[in-house]
Length: 279
Image 1 (cartoon, rainbow, N blue to C red):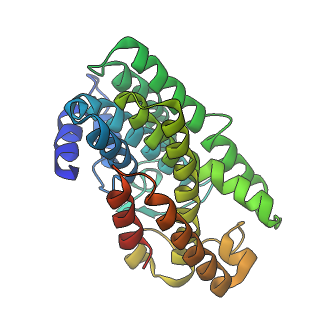
Image 2 (image 1 turned 30 degrees about the vertical axis):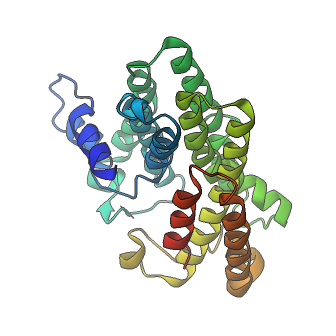
């Protein structure tokens, strides 16, 4: 499915006619830099599990989700935020071009995601629902709020409850949105959609704990982005210590493996995610 999504992405990246010397190149750069495509694959696997005939029709929604995620990375790497020079083994846009280009490409990807979404070959009611889910989880009460808290409280240690609030919004909301968007396309019951969303929030928090551990123990070459970069930030390693964060991760993995079994159609897929990413 990853290969099919990559083919779709390559043939559906928006291009514009202009005399700007590198606008289209910059627009494509971080989308083409790879990554796990974790969020779009979550969405697509929900559809595959419950309504496989809608899989091809779901590609626009998966791409829109990846575009929003990519915009968030571009902005997160800006000098005014993390000031990161690499992402996905690739120089960040403000390094390759300039800061204005990075800001504007992020803006374009965020806005164009909803254009791509509205071009989905699915019914209008579902498209409106998908726009609602994506905008709620990525917007002012979701990912953006988490980023704002992350930036504002640098060098101001938060307690565990506030730390979880920060990363639930900054990281987990968009992961949960992927499962919820897949649920909406597949026409799942409200009860199952809510359970998948809740699972996604916990899975997103687990990925953040793992990301904090990676930042502490891996080189930038191994991680594909700058590491040892969280010393001033509110991370699980800084709050709990490395051993404490590893113990928290392992406990969360065990908890989510038990919950994964309650999703019959997706249980094996969730187990594979947990086994692959959290050894």
